[in-house]
Structure formats: C-alpha cells, structure tokens
Length: 342
Ligand SMILES: Cc1cc2nc3c(=O)[nH]c(=O)nc-3n(C[C@H](O)[C@H](O)[C@H](O)COP(=O)(O)O)c2cc1C
Image (cartoon, rainbow, N blue to C red; front, side, top):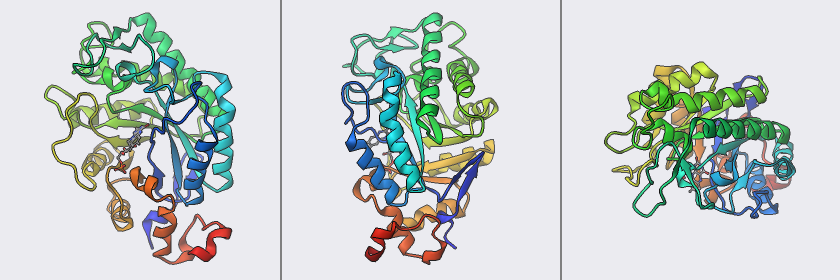
C-alpha cells in the first residue's frame, strides 16, 4: 500500500492523498490583484493531475505588501469572485485548495513606502523600510483579518499564513530584522507577538472546522538569526494559538543562501518539528521522486509532501506516481477522459 495515496484528515477536511502543490508566485495577475483565466487553467490542471491539495501562491492582504504589481491579492472584496471560480473548479475535481496569505514587508516591490519592524533594508540595494508603529501594526493585523474573511467567502479549505522567506511575519520573528524595543521586539515571545495576533485575528473569521497552516523558515542560515531551537519554540507557541500544520521551509531573511542544497535538504527540520512539537508538518524542497515522497510519509518525517518546481514541469506528477501502483488504491481517480493515457 502506497502511503502517499492515503487520505489525510484534519478537522472537517479530508485531503485525498498526501501530495500538495507548494505555493508559487506566478506574477500573472492583473494590476488589481485579480486572478485571470491563466490562474484557473494553471491551478485547474494540477487538480486534474491528481494533486490532493493545491496551495495558491502568496496572495497579498495589503496592496503595499505585494512582491510585484502582478501578485494575487485579497485586500479587496472585488478580488473574491476570481478566486472563487478556481476554488469551485478544484472542488469539482475532488481536490482541496488553500490560499497562502502574505505580506512582503521590507521585501515588497510595488509602493514607494515599504514597511518592516525596523529601519533595516534587506540588502545594500534595497530601500530603507518605514518602521511600523504599534498603531500601524494594529491596522496590518486588521488586514489579515479581512483577508481571512475573504478567503472564507471564496470557499478555500485551508489558509496558510506565510511566516517564512523573509517576508513581514518572518521579519518580526527574526532578530536579524527585528530591533524593536516595544512589546513586538526583544525576546522570542515578543517577536512572536505579531504572528500571535495575526493567528487570533484569522481565527475570528475563519471557520472553526477548517485547518490553518503556517509556513515557517526553520533556520535563517545567518549568524544571529533564527535557529531550529527557536523555530521549535515558535511552532509550540503557534500550536497553542491554534495552528494545525507547519509547512517547513528555510531561509530568506538575508541574502545568504543555504550552504548546500540537495534533494530533501529541508526534511530533517519538518521531521524534528513534527516529533518534538507534536504537530502535523509538510516537507518541501527538491522532492521529485514518488519513492522519496512515499518514504517521507512512511517513516513519519512529515504528513504531507509539497512539490514546487516539479509540478511546474509535470502537472500530472500524481497521476504518473499513481500509475506505478495498483489503480484501485488511488483515492483520487484519473479523470475519465484521460484514462486511456494511463
Ligand atoms: C516560481 C516560484 C515561486 C515561488 N513562490 C512562492 C510563494 O509564493 N510562497 C512560498 O511560500 N514559496 C514560494 N516558492 C517556494 C516554493 O513553494 C518551494 O518551497 C520551493 O520551490 C522548493 O520546493 P521545490 O524544490 O519542490 O520547487 C516559490 C518557488 C518558485 C520556484
């Protein structure tokens, strides 16, 4: 029995297999953050390809929080219908679908004024961000709340809070970018406060029976940055606030890259968080082989396997993986019109 094709249940959501499309910015929205036919076909094809859960790309909860002018957005009610169309189509294919809510903070690339916990640029070429005051932080949290409400209205099954890759939440978590002297800076508990209040605001809008995921960068790859020990504590505090799942990535707070990258290089972090915190985790990073994905699930290193670039190359990865094994065990059937191809 291939464990990759067993369902995964959390709260009222059952994902038909363990294969997840990792969030990937497509920079293909119109300037108003609305999804286009291109997004419908892009995500729809992966759903037809048997992916259990599709996580939509980083979707901005504030206009000034966009990485580019062509990011998807949920900062305005008018953006809901274009996403609802994608949700409905994925559901028709028996797929589950989530949205990654995001704010790029000092890594935003559209407006003249960018915001961050402290006046520290990402690198030498980046602009100096405006330091968010306590009152301004309150407004940012309200934007997350509104984003969650709109995600609910669009019918998503999952919200993933983007707390990784050096974007706003990560900027607050990491001592590299957060030099605040008020209640949002200093100790790890203080640096966690923004994320805590965002989780609380999201929970007030989001249906209680639907899971909330959190993407974290487990390590900063930079001296003075977050260590795995810090991340274990962040995950513990996040779990206590009601986070159901840690999607485990790394890096992004500073220009330093991981020293070595190889297939599955981030898996040990997800495995340790899963074991020590007792929370479901997702493994991501250069995972391309069904056997490797199956091993992750079988050996309990993660509960879900996220594929990024491999699904850009091959939207039918899950169908091919399923064809390697007995068809009847496959919970997510090959679309009938495609059967002769498999
Ligand atoms: C084109 C592209 C866009 C990405 N955009 C996002 C994003 O919006 N949010 C995010 O958390 N990660 C993003 N990532 C990172 C992926 O989700 C994933 O973690 C990374 O590519 C490693 O997985 P892979 O080796 O399977 O591609 C992006 C990666 C790529 C290649």
